[in-house]
Length: 435
Image 1 (tube, rainbow, N blue to C red):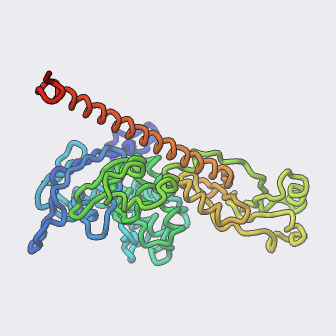
Image 2 (tube, rainbow, N blue to C red; image 1 turned 30 degrees about the vertical axis):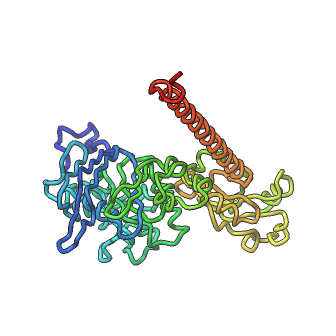
Image 3 (cartoon, rainbow, N blue to C red; image 1 turned 180 degrees about the vertical axis):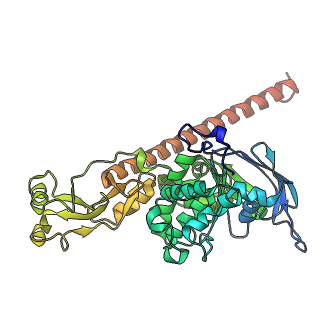
């Protein structure tokens, strides 16, 4: 977007910036994709309405057409028939290249251009849409900060110099750089290890809380769909919609056996993916910093109510757990004392993520961190188990209520049937109707 004219500038001379865009509604109307020579369409007559600002996840078996449906939204694949509306605009007939500049797109393995630096990758779409050099430079720094990468450290790096998780963060930053109302994500976290994937999912949840984009996300992982989606579209072959509902509704009331197969066993535990760490009690914990005098750390361990403190680095990030028993090894230095913190969770992590982290920790707790990795508090086993018990109790009560409703319905039907038989006998002159 070109710089605004001088009349639109503030008194300080800085260019006025447009307000960040939020999400736009998406409507798919009878969308079909048929390939020549194929006896059946790859996508067959899909209609769906996605609300502005919500995250909708397409989940289904391999080859069911979920990625094809996604790519038709920004017309990377041209539909054979049907219509696509984004906001108030019918985008089916407009210039597809211009459309793609208005719709963010993130894919598996990031899709970064290897010969371009991180900054050049992120700046690509803003430059193509006519942003000034100064505004583009500011936007690159803003996007790196938004996805948790230090602009000073990562601005001039190349993709080969990044980890898989860092590449995916840059891919998301590039997709959001031109501030599109819609973000399409095609299995973007499928090529990274499970721990990195969990953190990237948490980062996406945090970003969505800040940006309120309309996100359409494709995955084959139902647990990922539960964690990320405001609503989930479970797709059969040819993208036929088996169920399109909230994660809670799908977990507690799957539409049929096909959907039940995706839910799988342990629906109550899967519901731990619906509650975030920010929704439960994050407790304080004694901390010290690596720069603190050794004697003050010793005094804290000896005199404190707990036999353990969390040692933080210079950026207040969790570094080591120190116990009283470590004091003998820390007389001169902390280098050999304590246990390194190997796992943390963010406030946007799910209770299932937290539970997995706690179960792998011998002391039964996990540190909670902010967007920069700074320490916020601790979640422990007792808190998590209380929430698990509450979920199980809610499921038990719901099952009893459902059973009671079924019994009431059966009794009502029996009563109606008996009344119908008696009425029929009297009215028709049957055995009970004649003298």
